[in-house]
Image (cartoon, rainbow, N blue to C red; front, side):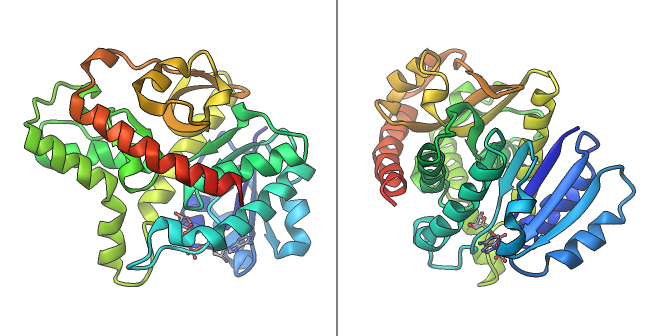
Amino acid sequence: MVSVAILGAAGGIGQPLSLLLKLNTNITKLHLYDIVNVPGVAADISHVATNSEVKSFLSDKQLAEAVTDIDLAIIPAGVPRKPGMTRDDLFKINAGIVKGLVEAIAENSPKAIIAVISNPVNSTVPIAAEVLKAKGVYDPKRLFGVTTLDVVRASRFVRDIRPEVDAATLRVPVIGGHSGTTIVPLLSLASAKLELSSKEIEELTHRIQFGGDEVVAAKNGAGSATLSMAYAGARFADSVIRAMKGETVVEPTFIPLAADPEGAKQIRELGAGQLDYFAVPVELGPQGVKAIVQLDGADKVTDFERKAVSVAAEALSTNINTGVNF
Ligand code: APR
């Protein structure tokens, strides 16, 4: 029995994410919540022939009910990024939305695992943590910022220049944060030997860091990544749920490093320093974070990558403080 709530289910990310999770046979109950249009989305998706029950919850009045008795809450609610807008411009609007939703989860399902998609993730995750602390239900092992799209882009973009690579199985650890130069792909630790030149590494790194902008520009004012983000969100949710059911699953994700202080030592030495949050590969378990996965061959990390980590850490520190002080 796994109950999942999607908060912001009628949006550009929320709708395809809801559909993909309707196809996930490990889910028994799917609660779709939004402040607009969600009854139609839920009715539509509920006809898909899998066994889960889909329920619609519309507006503040039904928020508490939407997040009661749930195991996992996924939050793609917010406003999308428009051309010229950085993820951080979104902060003020989305921060308030995330705060309200996490308050409701804390009150009604204090043990739920929370996966935040709403940007800027570097700040919205610390906001969620502060809300949970204030409510007395904070467990750093159960709070995640979804960075799966950065990992997905890394694998796919490598394949664009190395067609012999399988994009679906290639793994590139992506660490740091979830915006621009806070995103650090460690191409030197990729699961396949890539033999990339320094120019290719620089170009790929930049493309992975700013991949979201390609979508924003191509959509020409109509928003930011939705379909690939929904795919990434569904993949992350599937990993969390499989781990809940006892499988060992590794996913890179943005977490409070307090979730595994011992395991965080390696990433702190690599450049995370004293930061309280960082994206790292995480072994998931039934209770959320089981352990931070140690990077295999961390001594292979290049000077270019180390420099990128230090640039990321500086920006992240500001982003995190913005969230903590919201
Ligand atoms: N509670 C629930 N849902 C809300 C709330 C709220 N307080 N405020 C807004 N929403 C809903 C909107 O009604 C909409 O259906 O969130 C949905 C957002 O959908 P879109 O505007 O289509 O935005 P989308 O492209 O899905 O992006 C959402 O994810 O990646 C991030 O940067 C992106 O922060 C943005 C978020």
